[in-house]
Length: 254
Image (cartoon, rainbow, N blue to C red; front, side, top):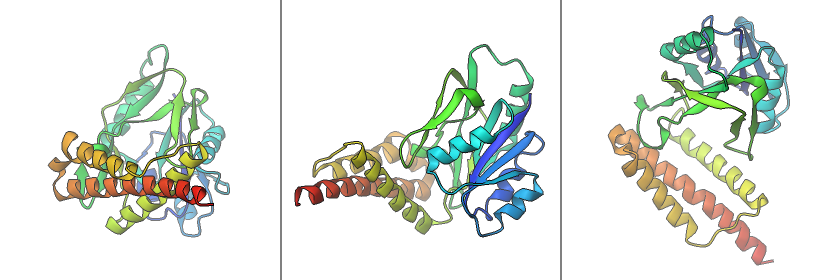
């Protein structure tokens, strides 16, 4: 069964070689939709024979759906540039698509494992972080707000076992900076959807996130990295509700 891989990019020179190399000979085409890279992303993609398309940024939902529409084959594998298939997952996908797929099954999910400060994180909120990334193109479509888009699949989704590797943050500063960006986008999206919150919300939601990540889901088992992840996650939750609260207070003061 032929398989398309779709990737969206912007200045991913540091990641894209690792991502595409992990595909091996698994896929029959690579579709890359770029929103304006000025580094060596295209030159690297060309070495892998990727079909290159430029599209000014449409948001995560619009950009991903465009990439899906450009794929030639019925089954697609969606990757981010900072991800790679583990060898186990690559062979599992190969075996899955070469064998009989049960009736009604239109997608497969996989656990995503993050490398953070030299350690693979296998507890807390970050693992298994199961995502549907292999599916029938005509049965799947992305939806959602400005950040944390979701894939909606029409049909049954079956779990795979192999890990999708994720190289998400360069360092703590990058982690914090992206948390700040996501918090702002989250608050803007919720505000536009009519969401409001009270003055205690930043504190109660942040406390719950820390307890869930570090204690209930075993983040402490990931050592100092687990502590740092839980701490930054709680801060990001506090920030996004604080921004949302501030939007309401600003409106009320007019």
